[in-house]
Length: 585
Image (cartoon, rainbow, N blue to C red; front, top):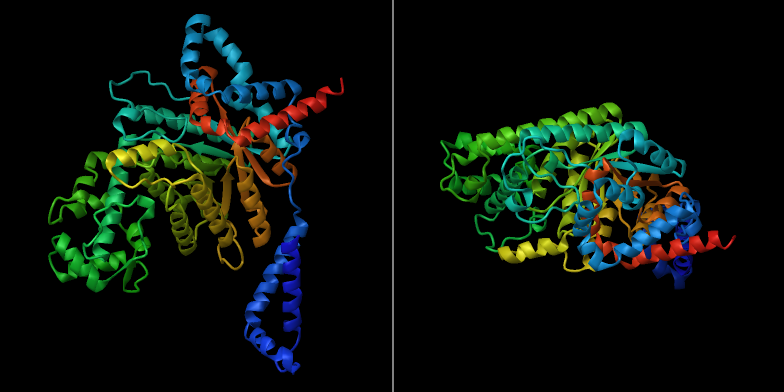
């Protein structure tokens, strides 16, 4: 209230100054102050407009109360509330979470698959999943839609390999752990083709059961994770090559985390030709001039990092490396012809999925994964956004993990790209997972940790990324109105922060979405939906015998979240709602 009073006073004072012409003669005691205000007249006008927009927005969208248990759980039966309370209680016990996979295996052995899955169906499965098939999820999705909630469908079952190949699993052949519960072991190209059919089922499921929803896609299901790791290494080395050229090969020996690398440098002709000659064989100056002109996309005589990264194709790096003066890191990172073929196969599979999504009017979110392969995922998603995000709204959404240092700068670069190239920006913003494993990898490699040093730093990064996207969607930001943001968070503070910034900036709230897991944070999702915001549930589905292992992994990976104060508070809200319902009897 004090802040609003100060804003009102400032607005009234500014209006007073602006109301009088600049020739007005003021009393002597006011003259010095008013002369300063007169110089600021243009700024005052902008401030008045911004403050009026904020006050008008605040009146239009009053503060939301997330503490109403009745609103949060009005869609649930009393049995569902009791089941939810028990699941939250069990999942808060570390000994159970750590050993739930062993308990599941023991139950299969003792009770058999039918009885075990029969019990699981009425407990964890029905709480966290919508059904086993597209037809089976329709009642749940309709129920959510009746309360203003959309769906982000994820076919959680893994494809089966009928003729398994004796290869090491994904965990053994790549460095680090995946950052999502759903993972795919790579058994060959036919396995990836089978996964395409799975993702197409998710696309059709959204079309049939959750119109205006999303489908979640994971690139490790469409190609070898080792290939993505090799691609990422190649992209990192291309970034380092740019820095070596701009710094005349005087880079610091300490490797920075990928998203923390300063990309603000640029290459003039003199710096470029000097650095290029020192690293590559060049026939003559004309050849070198043609290379420079190809990289200088806007023909201003300077190569920025955005121009560099957009102009150098993965398929061309092989040819580039043949002219290296020595076999350095880039030479070793270049993809060979076989790998380029596998890369093209993966792109073809993804394009097949996105073509169908475009035909069905379904938006697609590409999941983020572990940091060793994330640069390749970023590269592929950017390529797809350029191709598919040009129909007035984004079809392809990139996922930004804000527990990684430097993610704010990465988002700003992508916003700049989309504005410059004329395509619609679409983003899902998450905090991320596997902080411990990423830090452990960095220690083993002797590298700085890519992860924010504290939860507070991660939250600041999360909010800065959200703010950067929202500010670009204001009239002052000058960004295309079709840009869209999905805030995936169970943190009430972050949801309230986003709502506050939407109101202050006067954003079109139909372009801002919120997402939470099915079976969790109902007080956020249903309250937002009740107030007319775009709220979604992340909805896994699939055959129970294939989805239960997914649920077990998700429970273990989210053990910190399940034991957090927020979940405990949600359990208290469930208790209050049960008490309110049962007191009638």
